[in-house]
Image (tube, rainbow, N blue to C red):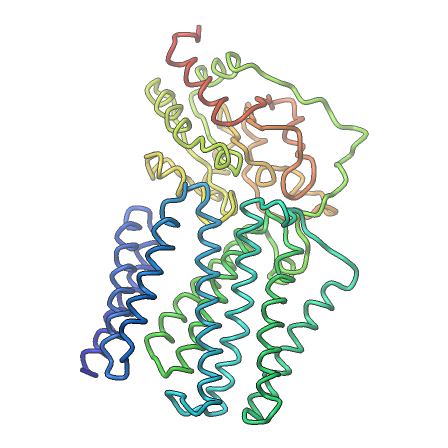
Length: 468
């Protein structure tokens, strides 16, 4: 039985590795999802068949409860995928934290399944800290993404905030060191409970000063924390499968976070403590030009006369659930021999790959999706750049305005297109809190309104013979 369990663990680990590899390419992403699901099923069964597992009714009950919660979560609209992802991280962190707490109190009661060495006690404390801060941090991130009323969307900052945050974490780590050195001391249980409370509080403190524009990176970092907590859990429970699975999760989350930070030209510390999204004064407020508004009919004529069109999707498209109307416009333009491409910024939306997922759901060909670095050289030859709810990722101020939070962030060069059509709900700034000078350029025309409604009207123009 032990041999079967170990072979199953190796198979599950291999499937996890293949899943990550296949998900690098949209063409094999579905295969990667299946590999991950099968790998997790094998991992559960490999653990379940071990001789030490005797409380099968509890396991069956937990699995049933997981289905009750998980099935509804799987049916949320794609626009809510970032929130669902954050909730998944919250559940993972909570599971790790609860297992760590249970192991500690079982050990105190003399019922621990493994010998609790100083190393394992250290891993247990790391598991609890990472697990519980991931739990509350992910819940806060999900609340911000869902725009829950009692959770402020803009960053909340106050004097000495970083000192408070780092201080809470430092105290938790200090107590953890004390528990590791003296695990059986009379005060150790109270210290352990204090570690749990501080980790929960730190998770909230971690997310409060972070704005919505940083959520793609925050979700990736929380993913890394959840993976690291699983690694620590594996060392505590002497499970090689948990160690390898957690390491894959943690390392992939870390790598993705690095990619996101590079896409914003920012560091981890800047993301976690920089309060990105704090309202900024308008750029050259006294010299702002007027925004020029275009009609749907005029915009349709511009698109009709173009040879190349680059569509730049953003969170506004996701909120309006306009991806299917985008696909209809893509089809209408393509039938007229117009070359249409989609420029994808790495941090557009509220999670990594958010725009790719939405456009794929609308059956837009993968070949039409072009990354920022590949599309930018083509922008000066582009006849029309159609910006759909994107704001900060096309703001030219990122190139020169050192006083703004987006300075140095690579952007899609929409302003270099011959004509820009920008669809926007209002004149409010994006999450960075600054005005977008793209909207006041001589070659830019605004289309105000809900992205889905505007695109629907544009598609009607092409279908009704309204273009002359």
